[in-house]
Length: 340
Length: 280
Image 1 (spheres, chains in turn blue, orange):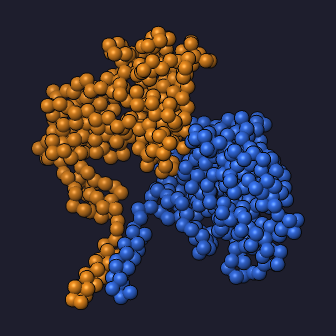
Image 2 (spheres, each protein chain N blue to C red):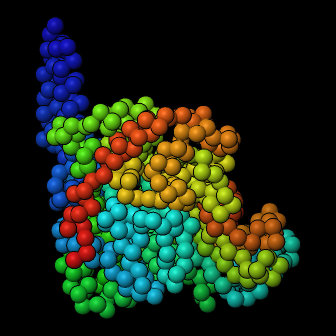
Image 3 (spheres, rainbow over the protein chains, first blue to last red):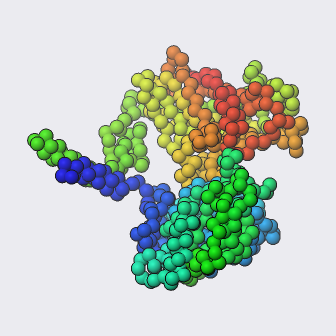
């Protein structure tokens, strides 16, 4: 052991020195309390000029709730991402955009986004900073152009002042707009559910919840692995490939990606109904039933899901009670995240 | 035993040294130097300074668009004939990124333009150009550039300048830059239009459409100094999109990374030829 000590010290030195000197701004999650120690490092490092601040976060929040960022001034980001539903659109299979237009996929909840290596159900977007471009510019959602957005922002005295304060540039650019959004979005952190309190030893689980956790670890955690409750990989869970939506294939054009979608986090899952990429399943009970049954279409579905888990009704109940511990009341009521 | 002890002390000292010196990004930290790196935190002694006698010169690269092997005049909104199938083609848009421009010194080393991203837009002027104002004086034997945007900038979040998504050269649903955008009218195509949006930067699934071009100044050298402006003229053959006889009826649109985009970007890139440079 002794003779390896210097080598170990040497390696530690490399790690310590490199970690400290990265030429980037680490995510300042501390702005709103600490992230639990069992969370991994966030995926994103932010460019030096996108340094996080309270005023940057507040500017991002103001933009998030501004209906003037849509073509007919009817919807904001918050119109399809409600805080009380962990920033999802509860009850709607697909959300409604400008002029009553409909999209084709279920509005996902927004939290812990700094840990998502890619966004959207097909994972087509590779960075949190450029993520808002899709809903802002998509004709089925907000249907704006960047020119229209910048014209609006540069003509509003309040935005002029706020952007100047945060980014200190004479004119508001699209980069500033995206930076501001990222500061709000990256800090939407949900890590204080009853499950978290259980892991931290602050609360105990009922027998049913404990049994549910055991079942979860046995059957579900390969794809929905804690603490983020997703591997953020892509899988075909048997909902099916439609002409209208081929999932991950639309990004990669690889045959094996047909019908694969990004595995969603299960945090706050009882708030984010209906379920699946197309919102085709209304309740969590039915979702558990879906995975319980064997899958007939064996050509595309993930092999581990094909036989079905065949849960008893008691087991279904236990899984459900465990999934309910993933709701983070603090997150959905925290006024810092809400409209000012 | 003695060697172990020496190793022990050596490694420990090294470890301590590393902790204190840090592993900061090294480079030239002097803003006066020609290879100043704003991202470098620690000077590594690599700073190079312009020869005060020669100073810095201006280099312009002109993209002279032509049509076909015989290099016929090209212009937007004018009808041309497909080199293989004789289908009629009229361009309304022809934009592409030229990035990561480098010049090679006689000793084989390269001078690199910093933040080297240029959007070339062909309009009524069919010979648009880009200008680099601060090329250090000296002789150069070759120029290299990318048609497209390096993979790093495709995955690094919100960019600005030539790379701003407001340039409409960016896929917002499938993150990445459209390296080459060619659009126009073609009666034979479905809907009467052609739209080629070429890009893709990943090596996996063969979707890397980045073209790296190097033109050597064969035998001659580019002489840069503060008393003259140097022009390099490249010929760009706009008919190369359909090289190999690809017809418009067969493929009127490409709108995402993939094999088709790579093939067409490769063909288009092969149509960039060094015509001449002035050393006047």
